[in-house]
Length: 284
Image: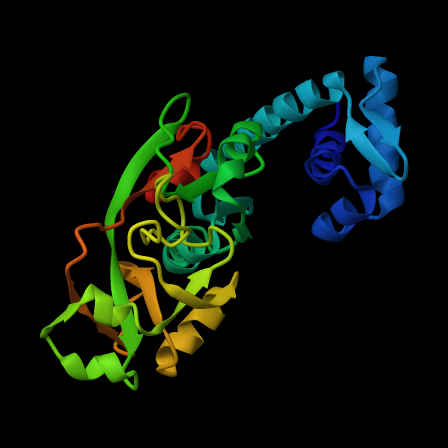
């Protein structure tokens, strides 16, 4: 088996779409198809089944996907160990949007400072998919608020607490450091995420960690965009419940009384095997 054939197969296996894989790695669809055909001929197996206009990995294809990523990881590690700072490689960091924005960027900068020729892909993924993406090698390093330890290398990097915040132009910002009763806060409009972009929360909590079952809010704005949340808060339009790392000088943290519930998270780095990639030593 040729390394390039395995690389091309891994790209197609990742997307289960030859044209998407072609766009991702800038290789023609024809070259990808030929690489898959060569592997199927050499191994005497079928790697993909055609389902309508789509393709799906066969059982043998799923096995080869896992093994190919292991082989490619070893090939990359060997190159990095030999070439050091001169090594050119691709590192994939995966996380929900907020964690990617506030932790992924810093990790990417650390990698680039040590390996200037590295290409870093910052991949936004739902936390429910992190384990499978790390297991198959599609994501080399994940940032997560889930308690993922079994079968992976994991390291805690932060303890997070959620805070009730408003923009400096919001009426509640005038309260200063004085306590504000939760019932007063609930009189105002909130912005709340429509999808779990703020990470993992407990079952009784809403997607932003607020206990709406105990203290129902006026969730007048729903969005899956981190930037939209930031804009609405900074403009003084809404109240938000956000992780502390998102709080900036444009926000005013409210000292809320009368609510015994808080949302806390542990942020972890997770990788399949920290010894697999030499560059991980500088961030893990």
